[in-house]
Image (cartoon, rainbow, N blue to C red):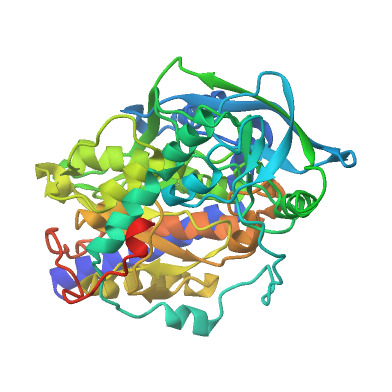
Length: 529
């Protein structure tokens, strides 16, 4: 055997031995569930810039330092106001007393003590609906959603991916660029502020919307966090069943009366949010770095367990595994816990803007929806000189299910290497490399800049059916075996990506797309949405 072949054989043997050690540490000595327990049971829901999020920032950074990671830091970016719920209560007073399942909508103001008022069902979805309700809302609690009807799910709420499910993800489908749809998205993103201004001008007491899931589940999502642009009126989300009950009562006779107490508090002590960064240094400073990330922030209807303490626990546990084993790969391994993901992927966007690519500046005072839709469709995007240092980014944010594979994000050339890195974990259920893209989380803006950002495929469990953003997102829905497997697979992928002689191929530099259908005729009704 030639010296070159002998060296390659030794490297392959060392790789196999290291992966064996990673699997042993990850499955038999795991701290993943302890990390998730602290984030959920002790700290709880982590709204960006809230006191709970500040506690989570400190605790995660302290854990990284205690494990011996290097360059632990909090990278700031401009966000807006902090906000937290101290207590809340919504009661049907008339025609009968009944406690309702409800939550204040994020970044809406408190009620001035307990307020009591009759309701009016006034569904408002677009600006053209304002005229129908002008002069009719003063002194009322306004129910702004259509009541709808009860849902009847035709699938089990808890499931794991089948082989056919996984195979269905392995399709390359072209991106469709529709300028008219982009314009609609931007109009819709600015609607909430216009609705708040209309309701205030009409003298409404508060507004109430219906939860978008049945099952007595509430979410409380809201996106008006910028200083000077938070809503003027208290907003409440009612469980779908309670919302429909009150709406039915409003259809005849005296209007129902609700009593609302929304004791919420703003925190303007620091308008910056912070990404928590830590590293396992590589042995070759010129080799660049690989990266793993998950978002530390959550909504606050519950404890943010599956979304996304599970991902955070997997990332932190992967860091602990690699540091505990003393692994020193060629490339640095960087770990990121993002803030502001729930509002518009703001933490990862800030990281990309700081280190990887230049984005057009955003106007001040926009809601999270507006920031997202402007950023996702913005041009031009220019890669920075340091962008090539990022060899791979792996994101975890699809709930608490075990990893089943990875989305190659249309990077056809990356598929063979991703398959090679996943191969040692096939017996743990992680083997699929799917060419399809996936969105909605913190690899998105790396992808938009043409950088190698990837999201794992995970078993859905009950994430989409009842957990995502809801008051049911507690520690109880985490599965220890799944979380240990996810952290182990992530650690193994990071080690191999950081030590590989090969790099994932680059995607083309981003350029502005042209309309997929240049002959499309727009429906005039859609132009008013």
